[in-house]
Length: 223
Image (cartoon, rainbow, N blue to C red; front, side, top):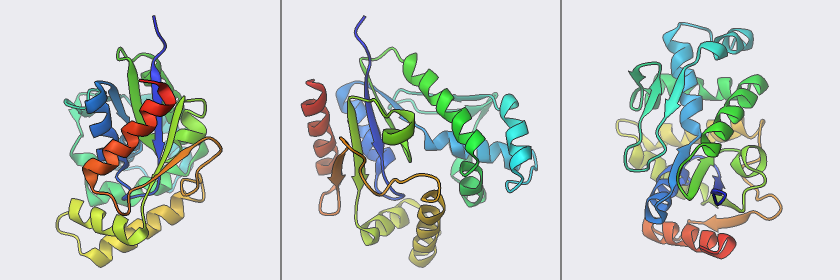
């Protein structure tokens, strides 16, 4: 059995990590893993249990009961906590507001990193595109393909505004800056580590960005 090809993609908020990674996985016929969904699902779980997101000990105590499942087929992507489909619920402003506080807890990151590696190890596809905040440096530092997907802040703000209905551009921009600032205290996702290829999508449209990512994959993994 050939070893699964892992494509690690990270970068700042609004860089298109999720949509571009999912589209690239679809075109390659590979699996897709959105690691950010796990942080959001845990945040939803904490809120649903009426725990204090700022109470690290309470969040850590909740980890053993966090029954998390996520689909890795880019065409049938769903997120579950227990029997509850939370695919949409994890994108609400209430959940978004607490993600950074929970993601800063080292025990949470270690727990979820182990979960991600289990999912990657058990995929039945030839490859898997894994995207998130610290994928190239922490989760999959030995992946044969590692990409930093980025874009200018103004472009990222515009893209994020288009994704989130009912939010003003100013509100979205401030939230994006806060998220980047909070998460940058935990992991460097703005600068490419050694042997990581940067794909800057500032002047690229969506399809061109997907093409650029696939070109990096083909060159690095010889597929």
